Length: 268
Image (cartoon, rainbow, N blue to C red):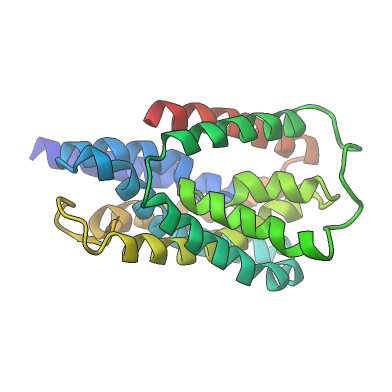
């Protein structure tokens, strides 16, 4: 009984924090939920070789709920660039499906360190006063208009994150205001979580040793528990985001990237 109460506390706590961060920073909250889920799957006796896959897949399922709530809150503040999402969504979805399928074929440790390296560079960009440091005045056209979002979808699905960790810094490099980048990233993350989640679901259908309640790599009870708590705090995070000055929000995102990197590295 005590173990059940403790597990429920972990799920609710992770959900409340993940939901707030989803609204505040446009991320799906996977940075918070994956380490928690990794520990919980260990307690369930999930084989080590599939433990991270299950944590990532379940995280993506949770992000569907957190980002729906976050998108609605940002939309009320006119913080979502729907035109950008219309041009990105298909390549982002394809990238996310490919990323999730790719992740099921290998260990994730090397990819975590890749993420850590990239996140370090992005954190520097967000933390330091580099407002004039951009790659262009508008988002790229031509080949890069589609290839870059596809790459964002690919690596976001591999890592089980909503995409904001990559898409927010990417958009700010092309002169997109930080508040609008955060709101738009919430919708992009929704696309990634749905597409990537389906990839993990299919990839885990024939895997043995997954805990009861799993559909593919997605553990439905854990996903439901965290998502239930997260939807309450995502609107609060979005409200706070739109009240913060641009510089403060940028610094917060940079600090988040540093914390996210440390958490992911420690998880593996």
